[in-house]
Image (tube, rainbow, N blue to C red):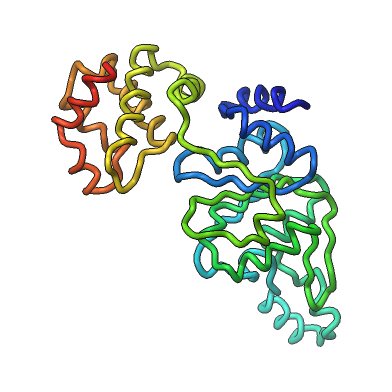
Amino acid sequence: MTHLELQGSLSATGYVADESLSMALHLALALGRPLLIEGPAGVGKTEIAKALAEMQSIELIRLQCYEGLDASHAIYEWNYQRQLLSIRAENTSEEELFSEKYLLKRPLLHAISRDKAPVLLIDEIDRADEEFEAYLLEILSDFQITIPELGTIHAKTRPIVILTANGTRDLSDALRRRCLYVYVDYPDRDSELAILRKRVPHVEDRLARQIVGTVQAIRREDLDKTPGIAEMLDWAAALSGLGVNDLTEDRATLQATLVCLLKTAADRGALPPEVLDRILGKVA
């Protein structure tokens, strides 16, 4: 499959990928390498993994990263309660206790244990601690996990690994070297319009153009939380559901629906009616 064919297959799932992203995905699949996708929140990085899994009809395994994430939650842990019950009931030996029977597989171990390669999404890796990155290096380099009591477990099949990052902190050079890399920014007007038409197809063309133009103008304002693609789609669905056909017709309704786009009190205050009027004057 060429990168253009991949781009078309992703489009069939509703995901609009530009040239650089489709090429990065194509190379990651062809080379069997993890792909690190960086970019601001709300540009559709997580959706890429979902679209890939849907496109190839394979399982999606997601590890949501957070501060304090450790191996017991991401890789594996022992079922201590079951081990204790087994000791009491059967006088089980230590060798038997530390066997796969008592092993709880967390997302990373689960991903390399599948008979059919899944998509492994390691979401927002920059929210995890640097120490956790060290756990990942063995997996991303050799697709294996070492468990002291069992030895090294090698992947049955190599998962398709997608890592996402929002730029919360710098990632280590060691992690970056093990991945291909692409930066995904907010889409241009034509791309975002294509996304809107794919995901909310019943929105009329004039309204769709107004929505995209307005959201792109709002992103240029000084906001705490810039609205992403998901917020744009929510707004489009809300406006369509309310029967709005033109953004300039009912300013009160329009102002009320900004709850779909603006997620903090400060941002609501930064976009009063007069600012919205200025934006609409340019895009209507």
